[in-house]
Length: 248
Image 1 (cartoon, rainbow, N blue to C red):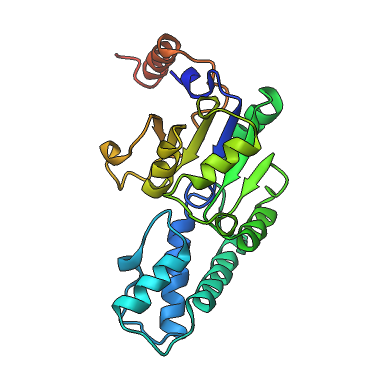
Image 2 (tube, rainbow, N blue to C red):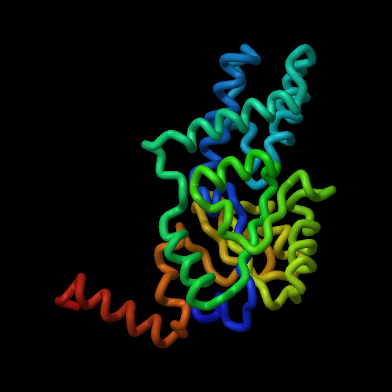
């Protein structure tokens, strides 16, 4: 069943926020709210109402300022920079488990054991993303990285994915993308790349476009199982069920 995820593939692409960092969208909302409360002095605005998963922080602030007619505040760039600083502070807290479960085991298997290329494809600006990657020890993991400020049009536009394919000299069918947001999946689908969704169960599965191979809450079910076809998967699940429910 999981065999189809990497069968015929030469590379695996990863989004950052919400995919490698499962809770970073929530951290972003916390950061925006803190800035609204302490700097903009607009605690009456609920940052949750301006949650646009997969889209750049700039878009969130542009929307907040426009809808609430906040004309005398800091610029979008200043607010975005402050937000990124707050997000980094949250992730830097040693009590915070930043990386999505199973990610390290999974990327070790695909890089070191299967020798597949890897790429980071994120709307996050390079300076912010590199700070985060260095913090979690992933700054030297990827064969190629592309950031939101290195493309003219961020996700959901497919430009980022098309550039990644070109840089790694790959055809779309030779890659698979791990994404979490609708915007990211739309971008990968437009580039005709197969997709695995790290799913938060908020958006209905049928809303995700393109060739979505699987939905997972994290990466824990993947390491060691990438050679499983459907029958091997069903046999394993039957054995697991028998162990947990011996009366069945």
